[in-house]
Image 1 (cartoon, rainbow, N blue to C red):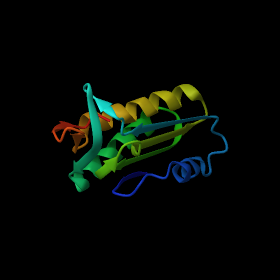
Image 2 (image 1 turned 60 degrees about the vertical axis):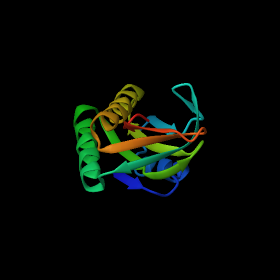
Image 3 (image 1 turned 90 degrees about the vertical axis):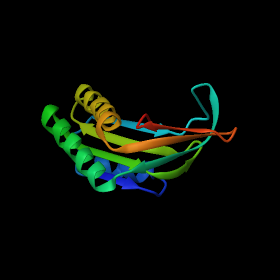
Image 4 (image 1 turned 120 degrees about the vertical axis):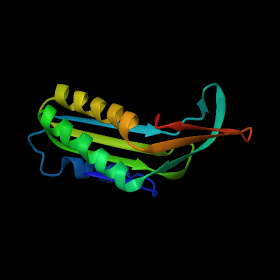
Length: 139
């Protein structure tokens, strides 16, 4: 399952959803990207993300399907926020459930790297001095 949302990401609910019907999975890996307070040596006030939603969802699902085929994993969930996101809040959440940890780690790393590289999501870093910079995906 992949999702885009303007709402806060509920990590606890997503973790429960990831583990549903996966009693055979001993390796569960979660990646959570958050808004940090400094980027490129400048204090950050907040982030804003914009995306082309129909294409972003399609590409995210294609990446998910590729990971499911490449590794022996039972479930993958990827959720990315868009809109304005304050300091400390989660911008992206990826969870992978697998019988073994190696596959879970590898699939999770693949998911975040591919999402950053291929999904049409753009990040605007808003600095405390009133300046900002746009960047293509770099959670």
